[in-house]
Length: 372
Image (cartoon, rainbow, N blue to C red; front, side, top):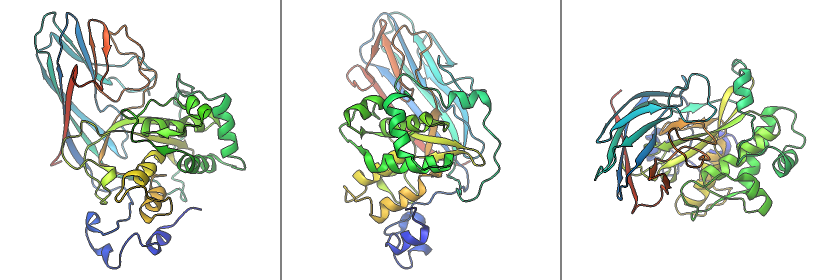
């Protein structure tokens, strides 16, 4: 059943009189992003190599994804003691018009203390689509439709993935019906696992085969994307970073301070004729279930109901978008492809360093809102 705003209010998500308060001040706030004023953020990523070698290179993702309705990448500048540093495109299929996805940095042999600091600016705002009112959005071009239906290494669209999606969407007569059904299916069958490293891997076939439908955003939203693609609905992951607290008072949906080093978050989108790209984020619904105080909330809890209502069609603008890439080949690297590009990457003497290993690979990311 799709809850309305009135249903959520009746459930106690907003106390009497709280609607007159600032959004973040409500005792039990409604989560309802909608297009509003643009906000500008400055994000600084600093990378240091703790154990240098003869050959050292790094790749830092930049905010590259653009959508005139809700996100506008700005300038990228950097300081470094590297021999060379330049913006580059990752070796992966990409939307037309995307020229660079990362900063590629190469240090000279023998550099004792390799360091680079990247500063990126981005403008963003809340987004929202009323799924009861088609906008008449133009159709997706053939190349992007093909890219958004394509299987990837970890997102197959046949076998158990398609079988699962067909069961979940049985009776659906439109792409919108399929998206609603798959969004609900992921929320109701998967859960967030706090022990998952980083944002997860997104190996959806293994998740379905083992029945271990758990992980973090790169797992749960990839599950939605793969299921949608398997039944003919164009969908994609957008890899990014939370850069500000939630203005609706949800502690789990934004960082509490300017240090956002571990605030990476993958969102998803589905393309619907008549609406365009629509925000979809079942992973954040499950994050609210697990983490929103006091924790371990029921699906019927008003806070969960509010996010479940909002996160099909809406998204808060406290987040930057890096890219929509899968199966990423880093330029200048002989190492393995990445399932996605959301974290800084490092190679020393031709060996890819685990980006979660702080004794070898130190990086820090900070974000602050600035006057537009």
